[in-house]
Image 1 (tube, each protein chain N blue to C red):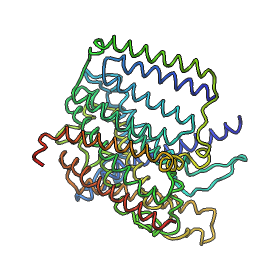
Image 2: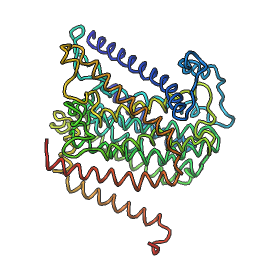
Image 3: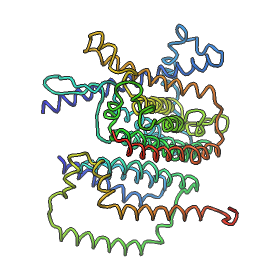
Image 4: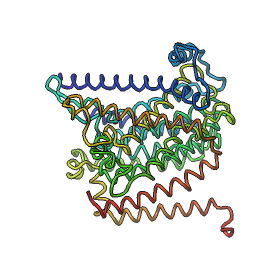
Length: 166
Length: 356
């Protein structure tokens, strides 16, 4: 049963990811990305990571993709031919990634499903994520927030027309 | 297999009942809104269909059903059809985790069921937030696919507005979550039992009154109701994102708006006003010796709180003029957001100093 779900989610993720780059109309691309985010969230649910699934939808589908759509609609990009210029670079990158995937798959062979933290299944994974994030992974967490802060300041500087005025 | 079958049948019956009640409430709301607005403006409201106009929603529904379904020239037909569905489904799906009454279990055919909540999942409130944010796609895509400048502007406004105010909704809720220590709406409601001074609007150690105000204002903005109805501002954009829609597709947007109103009212009632808990400890019915009927009182209190919020929506609509677009953005980011963030800070300190 869980294999069936995995195959469904994985299949849709692959198909929609290809559509994101293959479709000519940017709005349709964004829509396939939306479907992909949902299926990634579904994959998390099958792994009993409900918190991650909800956050995935709230952050990516609810905020980031809406911003993408906003920009696409604001610029009113109808059709775009720019993908053809990048074909050689894309082919090269694709080849590298494919090699990586083949290598990883051949090395790992068959493993059982990766086990999550045992505590996560008992206490409900929201509590566990909170505890782990603020104890074991406190430093990486703080570094990540610092990086985001830098990005925010950068965006404000870029958006400000005249810095001397303030 | 029979266990799965019985549970499935029970869940489907629950879903059917909840959907029926929600759609019925939408019907009542369309009439109630026009009546309330009429009375507030010293008018009668609809009076023609049936006694005092009470059959007006049925007439409206029939009219919408028989209207010609028009797809404008140059519109993206697929997205034009998809958009109303994308708006309606997330609005209805959120009701799955709302506790409508006391969290008791009944036994049916030897299996345990919770009659008043369809699904008590441990990320309840996040689930609702996730799906309400999807509702924005219906509006945005409806605006874009109509091939109409007014619709496009409405869709763009909706995108910016929903992102800005969704943030405030999320942050306003965090204070309650800090006090309750759970994301499940059932557990949050249960933590508020025993009198109105336990409701999170008034609760010790830090009353969530600021969060409550931020939540109510932001949820009005998120449902695109006046005074925040910029995506459909009729004096500027004809009808905004649904200018080109007619017939049942229009009805879907309409249903989505009202279902969203009911949903945010249910969340506000469950998070801040104690859900189905009465404002006094215990229930009156129980004291009269009818323990089996205590759930009736809970459901009635929940409905009363939800209708209070729905009335507030109408009241605001009758009272306030529409904000200008820059005022809307400034208000959201420079007033509501700092209040919500400050509330989280103070609540976190209070919850740390006075652990329950």
